[in-house]
Image (cartoon, rainbow, N blue to C red):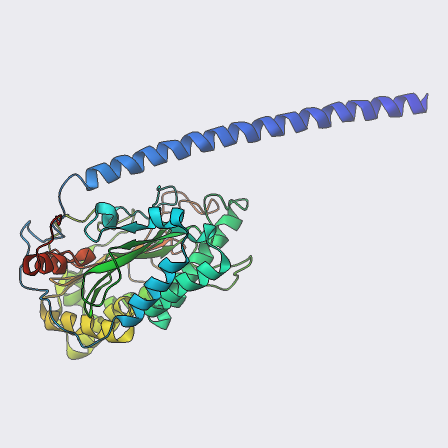
Length: 410
């Protein structure tokens, strides 16, 4: 009797377990379908955003709709780009014919403008996830030749934190991960002709244009969610802390009258960036306080903050860009949104005729344990651009075509 009762209990338990298993699989299948449908929706939205963003020919970011001319002459910088060219040649030499066909574009191709931070965006190029180990190393050599040690480390750490994000999302390495980044090459690497390359992926986009010994490394987007790995393979990795802390230090170095001009909104309740994907032609007026009203020490702090972004380039080319920034320092504006306490969330913008920098604490997207809709220090976006027509080196390319007409240039 006891045996029969025991077997009955076990049989009932077996049915419950079996039913639970079926329900779990059903829920998983439904969740996957929902996830797939959501992914398709996001992809359609990104394609629509791309179509809208590229509907107009490239003009560049302006303050009033008119491009300020003469800011970016073709000239010799005295800083060689040969190491970048050699590294690009070496990378291209490793590609299979199939990889080359989806990686190489003309130097004036609209592909330059087809980038987006979101992980679901459909990208061109060769992905790190499909490279062999030796191809990856050669690809990283291209980054080493193009970036400073700081820029290389930050880029690699952003990639590593994308692995952390996958770990935090049930090991979803189909959407996130260290190797979900793609490289394209525009034009033919050359010492004299224009060319460039692009790195594109979640929270890391770099556009790198080369003409002779001139370099334009914008638009560049760097961000992360999370910004610090508290667990997993890359525990301890953190990014964008100098950009955050030096920005906060600068606003707190201003006196009351200066702060009143710099702070354009006192409360930070939403995402504030305006210069991200498909914003190549936005009209963005100056806001905040002019650096002409800064003390010498405050100007030094501002230049140091700008240097955190520009300093992701190789030293020589970074110094060329910083020299350009210093020429327009008094015209540079610093604007702030949010509070200014030690742990505040905030946005700031640095804007001059030759540079636009944005830093933004964003609302959570993929970190499910954070409060929805509230900006957090665990999700940061930053972007650096060259206003007045020289993102992607477009103004240099335009001048080059004027001097050396190409049959199919546009």
